Image (cartoon, rainbow, N blue to C red; front, side):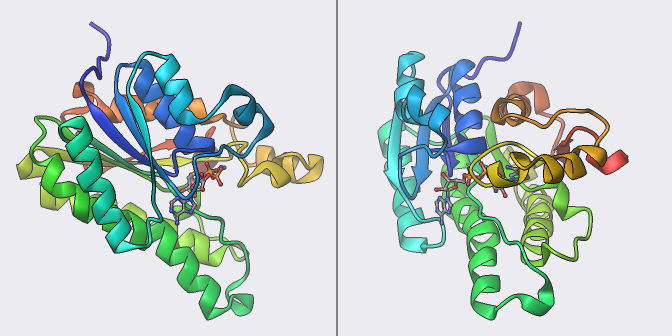
Length: 258
Ligand code: NAI
């Protein structure tokens, strides 16, 4: 039998657009109901806008979906998000910590304000979401946390310092939460995407020179789409991954081995 996420509820942060939207749609394809937690429910890229909001797409697929306006850096909003999701969907089974922002720049040129902002969204946000989802996830018979890191968590970059450090942090959050929650029946894993054409990366990947620089570092000769990350999330959300916890799947076209 294939993967079946029927009757599972997934909270996907940053699920209105990009990779989070791709993850939400792929989880719904396997039967999950979706809570989209984002600053705004409007998608960003023209092709996303044409198809409708994530909630509309998931509902068209025949599953329940709700948007809850949430800033993942605000603990009160995060706490309320998890309470609302659990109340309306009778629990939470899957948390996808996907919301994130770019953090380009050299350390020598990074302001403290920018550093704090990148870490607040990319690292403190996932911590807060996990903290407030845990009471519900342990009630699930198959609790799952999926943290979206980056191939940048593994390789130093002299020009992307705050971002890469925030992503190295979330990678270790994955391991720490796995150690804490394994005996409670909650598996915690991560995904390290490589370049995916979203609002965050459109300027880079639409520039032929920059795109080629990326492709030259990879094994494959194409960059990813949000659904590529969504399919990995489906596996990590499912019963099939019951013996996998504390690890990260690289979905990066071979960037890390080239
Ligand atoms: P995106 O910019 O297309 O989407 C990010 C989503 O997060 C947006 O909907 C945005 O509104 C939301 N968001 C931002 N700050 C938020 C906050 N404080 N609270 C709630 N929601 C917030 O970006 P993309 O590319 O889809 O990125 C998703 C995740 O994937 C991020 O964590 C990013 O670091 C990671 N990633 C992306 C890669 C890429 O090539 N696109 C590569 C590696 C990792």
